[in-house]
Amino acid sequence: MKEFGSHPCIILDPLFVNFIMTEVAAKSSAQTYSMLMGEPITDIPRSYRYGCYRLLVATTMGHLGKGVKVRLPSCFVHAVRQRWPSSNYSGFESFDTNDY
Image (cartoon, rainbow, N blue to C red; front, side, top):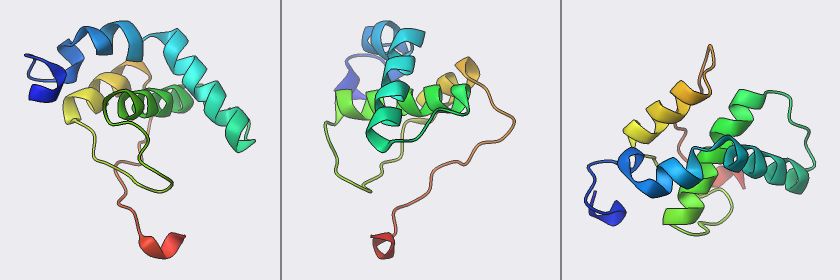
């Protein structure tokens, strides 16, 4: 993936290791989202995973807009799921324009 330097996947890039996958970054992203949405964090691993997903998108793609979803690199999703595991995952759900 040329966008992330000379690495075959973002998980080998210093951006990923030093910024996105830290517990502090995941927690901060999760708490910020929780405050903005007015929803308490009830599942910490899930919130941290989603925090990492948001950080990757914001850092590499910028703001996409409400309801705009992109498929993330599978190596990234796998690494995040290993760090903050769960017994079930929702997976990628495409955006339906009828939802808004």
